[in-house]
Image 1 (tube, rainbow, N blue to C red):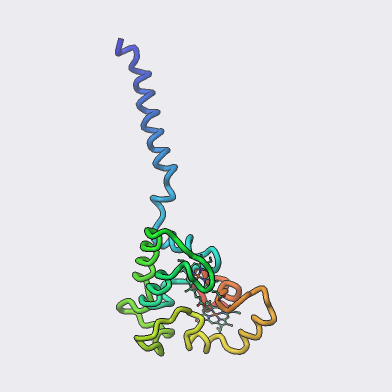
Image 2 (cartoon, protein in one colour):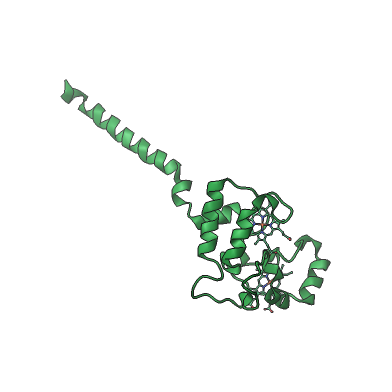
Length: 161
Ligand code: HEC
Ligand code: HEC
């Protein structure tokens, strides 16, 4: 009796295993969602996801602590997501050990920059010529719209002009 049903049992077993593999693949976004991907996804609705290496730890902490009042917008996220993104940004921030980017050099430790675009370094790189160009091309919006001029900005390339 059992022997007769064996093919069916085997079939059922295989089907069950297959179904399991498929459901775990079905929920794959979670498996493949690194903190970097999460940040890119959640922080690119309104502008490109700025690279963590542009701002120091204290800036990311201040930004992530006040997402409901984010540059005049409500960029709220649930607490768990905020925590994960903040950890990623902090881990890759401009003032991590061993890093010393040009843009941080003139910034006093007790100042918390909230914008990349207001670093003296940045304003030096993006002078009158860039500002005039933005005024003449209203679709750019503002200098915070990095990809309008740096085609590889979302991949971290800025020296391509
Ligand atoms: C609901 C829209 C929205 C979302 C979502 C959003 N932002 Fe912003 N963000 C803005 C606006 C608007 C500005 C100001 C842009 C401007 O001045 O043109 C801004 C500016 C910034 C700046 C300063 C850019 C500069 O000028 O140097 C940083 C840094 C920043 N956002 C980080 C983040 C991070 C991190 C996240 C994800 C947790 C995020 N943003 C998600 C709307 C948003
Ligand atoms: C309206 C156009 C425009 C916008 C918007 C813009 N940039 Fe630039 N950026 C330039 C130009 C022009 C230069 C000078 C390029 C040069 O001289 O090689 C430059 C230079 C730079 C450099 C130095 C590149 C190098 O290696 O010499 C960096 C880094 C940079 N920009 C980052 C940014 C970031 C980050 C943003 C957004 C927050 C941004 N830019 C927005 C036009 C722009």
